[in-house]
Length: 183
Image (cartoon, rainbow, N blue to C red; front, side):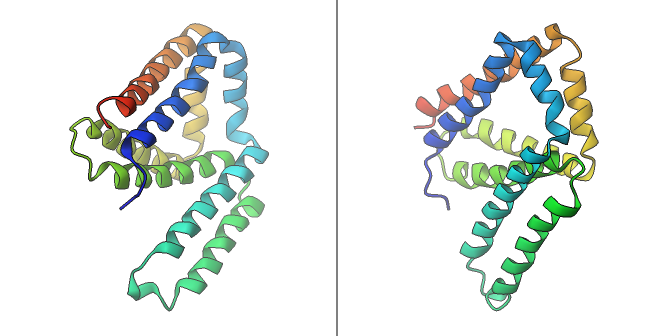
């Protein structure tokens, strides 16, 4: 069970999701240009993949399942090698793959945190987490879909503004739930 409070997590996630989309509303041309560069950005990919690898290694390290206790040092070495190896040998769409790893890990945190909360509003977080799992898995096996999704979103400024407004509104909703109903 996570020691993080759902109210804190929801507030942080909502704000982190809303802020870039508010920027997209205010400056769609620059935001669209940034989004279009993301799928092939090697620096972003390396940073996201290494962050995802470190977070995954943290989860492996704190795992208390005795079946894996003997193998844990080897697993840590192996998973470290996979994370670093991806940065070296799997550079095509590395940023999308790194983002996918982080989406899956963040979804785990969200589900672990919301599980024990009383309010039915916690289901907003759970549904969001399961949507992230589906997208993370989909983008992992076909990362070009993220590029295509970004291209659709940024096809024109009006569409980008509308989609940014919807995402910003959802982020604000989650943040407001964090400071009200999920306390």
